[in-house]
Image 1 (spheres, rainbow, N blue to C red):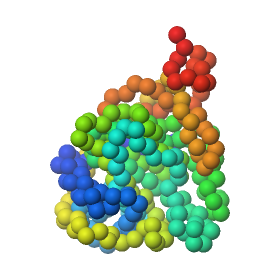
Image 2: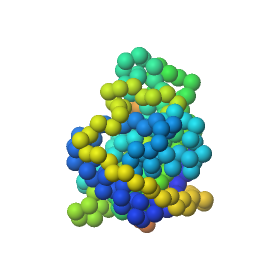
Image 3: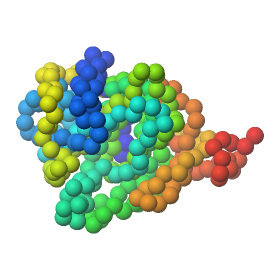
Length: 266
């Protein structure tokens, strides 16, 4: 399994600084369709690039060409994001060649919200004419948000954000900063140099990485259906969690769990 979880990754002050910038970017990118490019050989020009630069070095991956980064939000617990693989979509549209991101990250700039769910199903690296699902489908990885938490993976896993799980405090939202590392720059127009009117502030972030070294396997309480490149897949879930939890759920359904209900039989 090529997934890491850091329950604490940023100092509180650094996480709050990034959240302020994220809020302004979201206000100027209301459709949340843009991603931006930062070349790792260049000195960081703002606090977000400083975070990416330091994080890439912390992971020992400073040799990559650069990072594609973006901000996403969910205002309500009913919101979701479909299960997908991070890839160079515009390259595929323009040339027919599909490349998946070799390293993906999610950093939470919020407390509360829906989990990120990563499946034990990934894109076949050897195929470049589209997305092909492969893998054992033995587990799913669940990460509930916590301010300053960070997760990452180094296989092109299918992942998404299911609705109606977790809790968002009134007046708040789920906000994440994501970046993928690449050895080739993703094609425009999806990925461009940062181009919003807001000038991201200068500054440094300070990492305080505490890795979750023993991810617990939990039994399923039920399932929901996700579509992995059009293939309906039952994702087993465990219904109890604490804020900021990361854990694994086995994909093997217990005998007392109905195929068509969310909770175990009495």
